Length: 270
Image 1 (cartoon, rainbow, N blue to C red):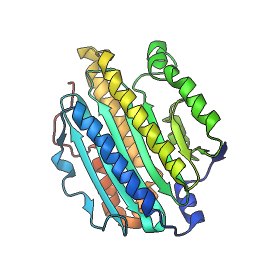
Image 2: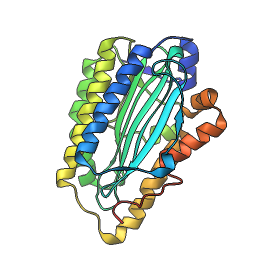
Image 3: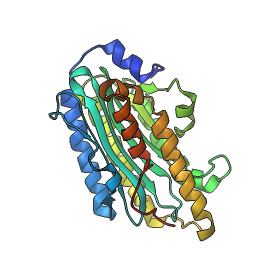
């Protein structure tokens, strides 16, 4: 197994123009399937602040994008988004789900992407507790995945581990994150999509025995959850590509929508 240390922009520039439409269409279809798993389980409503955040473009060609964000009684904020120029090797799709402050669960994060010639995937649980001191939380949500994490690394020598050159991104990536790129072939796409579905089903299952937070700690939990979303959205290395595609004003609007700067719906769990 190799390792990638280049930035998103470098990966795209090194590949040059390459048509990844066939992968992008699969990313879109799988993301819709995962979205159905979520909406079958949780009551959700589109937040009006994200209405109209679409960039026109025929599916699979040209510049194309959309951001939709949702909230509900159990889910504080969910991002369902994509932006792409698939004829030129770029696609970046997200499903991110922040639980309400009333429940002691990590945030679910997923991205399917093409940064040039190698399909890329990220799947993780972002902790809302200090993993270095909260052993039970660590063991339940991270230590329990260690064998699976080792299995994926051992059995897939064709994949490259993605190590972000940005220290902050490394800081918010957990010890059991799935963060790989691989050859531009169907087995790579299948591995990335398969693990995304696996972890989403696992995360939904965690709700069955999730611990409740106390009323006193919920305001701080809600603020931490928003702060995590905000900084990750603002510092996402792929924002530079979005700026090149859509311009700074549109990119700024998309980023603010991703973390809910102008949300209308109430916070969950307060």
